[in-house]
Length: 499
Image 1 (cartoon, rainbow, N blue to C red):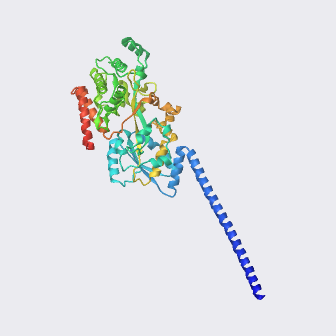
Image 2 (cartoon, rainbow, N blue to C red):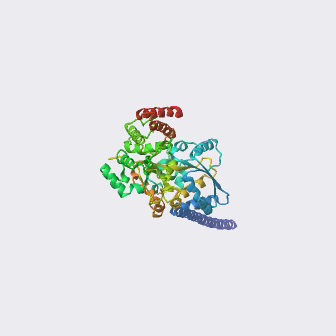
Image 3 (tube, one colour):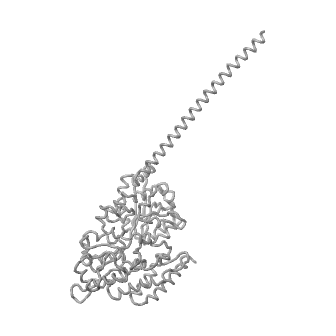
């Protein structure tokens, strides 16, 4: 009997223990489930917060986004960006808005402004040495190829993915300037421009002059639709004259550039309207051969020679470059002038420095074309680069993104120092009012042709313009010059590339 009671007691105790264990397990299970539920809820909330933040950031204008993210990255730190800028207009334009960036972010910017030649020399040394502490490099797209391919500059694709610049609202195809041969964005655009004409309104728009021209040549000229081989020649001839009757010509029909390198731009502006765009301009890197030895190049050079021989071109042609042509035209010495649009900026408003300036005295239009062919002209950019060893690469990129935003693009354009990136800036009435030259840049947007990314582009231009000078001075025929240009370009490629 006692044995049965003991067994019974043991069973009761076991049951109690089992119940306690089961209860504890259930409680633990519930506690674990609650903890997991809480953790999952927190994870979901965090994800939703992150997604909401990303959505908010994506909805921000680029200038606000750049400032917000830069401040986050710089929080608690003393950051100073170091930049190498051009002495030309793009550097001056950026200089105007740097104080606004500093005020908004607390991030300082130290910079040095150099000429294009100084930039080219110093940047090559800095990139080769490494560890310079430079965060931003501003560089002329005209000679962009070597720096685009330089292994010491940063591939910006990850940053472009993180903070898109929206190339679709910029000048058509401007993104093409930014790629290296591997298809990476190693540069991003800052400033854009193309080749245009400036003209004296007192002559070109004068009804009496127009009537006299029609009586002499049998047709009316249209300043917005001149042709290289006909009406441009006739207009230049017509307006070349002795204005004070002293027996000397003192007004010339046109001013083009004949100085080293600069003459190549005037050649290109005309050549692009004659050729069939069926090959690379000047040089084909895939074959290592010049492409200039053609009928279109000869026709272009013969036409330039005709203006010089007839003395319809300003007599200082061989000394006229990108800068001096402004004074030549602004003094009233020529009826027309050819150059990249930013050169004409000082003429947009009346100035005591230039007798022929201001909207009542000067007009702007696209370069001539050829009858029956699409109108074309070259365009180019200034690019920004970030060295791989930049100590502040992401913040430097955000600064550049901020500078390229629609808001800051317009602010810089309103200073008249900046040729914008954004199409909307060119269409803004406030901007156009202070920059009347901008309209001329968009008369034929379908015909824009990028200055090509050739590793020896600068060398090809020097070779070409040396022989253009020989043609102008009468020491070489056009045929001989073209043959020599082609041969010397081919030799230069072998010298530089070793192939």
